[in-house]
Image (cartoon, rainbow, N blue to C red; front, side, top):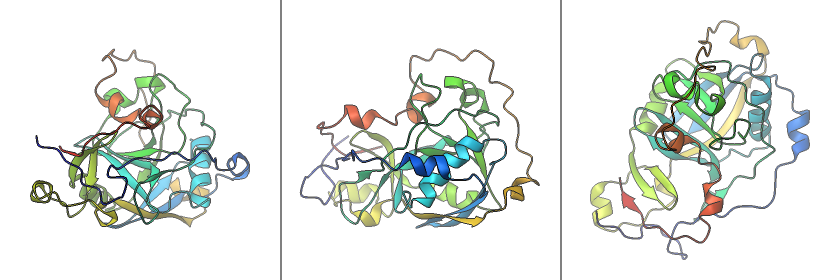
Length: 269
């Protein structure tokens, strides 16, 4: 396929700058895991997620630390894998390109209590590192229990999309996807194959933005009516896929560190 630069930035390439600053770990340690209902406010519509704070308390506390620090304002969905997951929480748009990496708190302990079924939100982490989740999360588009419930110690599902919220998530998953710098399956809005052919620059208007994530209900009992499926595969031996497949799509949190200074063209996927 023909490839060319698309990003309207003086640096010519879309590069992801990593901040050396970290969010205060004190925020993480002192934040009570009390809020269970949050709203994702996106450019394609809003949807609510009920968090499992009583059964995955460390993961929920970790997530809420970022929420309450406004770390997820204008974060983007940077990976979309068809019929698998959409992933975000690692990078944000500050009004101009390049994107900026969201500073990470200390990693959180894995809590693989529930199954990675469609509609659940789970934490992404490093390959072959069970307790490495920090700020990135993903939504399961399909029932991914057979691989994600046992790979790498299992992925922690810590909440569930409510009502018709998956309509918005599915709309995100339906966006055209491109290969951008270190990312595969980078979703873009209002950007077509013909735009690609015409060398149209990619701007902030094309990014799949999560404008904010806010707490709607701080009652920890809001999840009482839910009946999430338990992870029953956690003790099964995972297949050795040589680092490919679903693990390769999710466990890429720190690849940007390895790719600093590397220039890749934007390719149509």
